[in-house]
Image (cartoon, rainbow, N blue to C red; front, side, top):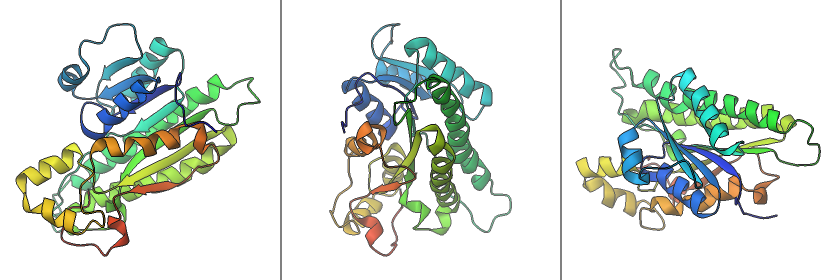
Length: 267
């Protein structure tokens, strides 16, 4: 099997910065057509430039918590590239939770942002993948969906309650959707990461510089990975090379989840 994604079309959410941007650029460099989706249009333009109606990379700005926006994103991708073969749900938000405050809304916010958006987009894209495959009885896999999760799904901290809940939900959604879409020849997997310099972690370390040393100390590989170190794992799950892999959560965290949880952020 080949790990190539050349000629395939991918939607990558959360691609205005950090990990999502690294995945989008990597996919485009490997010959995939990439629709970069994010709420932050200004940042998309800064990172990607004034994308013209040619080439293999475009962007779409909009609030993906809205169902109409999701439908418009899929339509824009089809208009640009005629098909969609890969979806990477990389849009994520991290918020701290006041676990004893009944007025705290972080759980609702992150379930909507990190879980429901991924579910709805997966549903819309899967429907398109199924339609594309009509009449094709030979292709073993007609689409691949990759969700980005976090080791916070299993290593809980009180202030990350909402983030942990949404991450755990995303991983269970990955397994459930894998079963639901397997008869349609669509694979669904996830990458769970911890010690990766995402935009959210970078911001957190800026506010709490002592966290960097804590994370590095409690990571067996003794460092925080760059976003680019995550992209090969995502490409593997998106490619035909993982054609018999579905419902799996691949951990990429430098070994952090092998140790007991410690006083360091799990994202």
